[in-house]
Image (tube, rainbow, N blue to C red; front, side, top):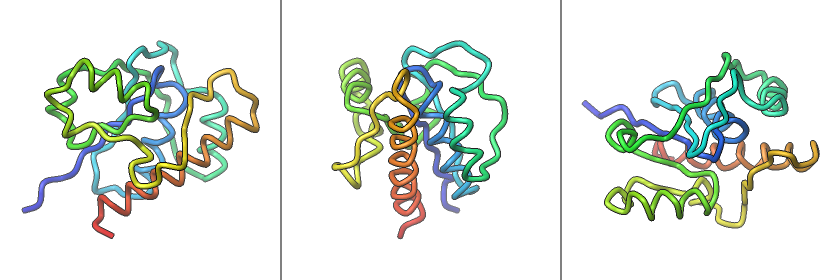
Length: 147
């Protein structure tokens, strides 16, 4: 029996990007355990309003989000730790080099697409980053299902 694949998306605050990536992958594939975390989470009761609007525009159901902090135990719980930008990847690799085989960039399959932190950016730039995340999550889903 094949092990259920598990993915953790990690950004800075677990408020803008990683919850969107989580819900996008969950909408594409219900055979994968998916979650999200932040290295320095914003402890609010939900994700950023523009993130919610983006998911709503794609008719993706999302519950109230509670940002959580990345923990070293996540390496035991998830097959893939997918970071949303180079800064987070570098921080995790520096701190947890023994787990480098589990850390991947979201743009692993399409390095020319970037997903910088959209917090405090214009709505147009914010939405472009969300569209980039959508494309990159689709690429990850193709990989995870073996396409």
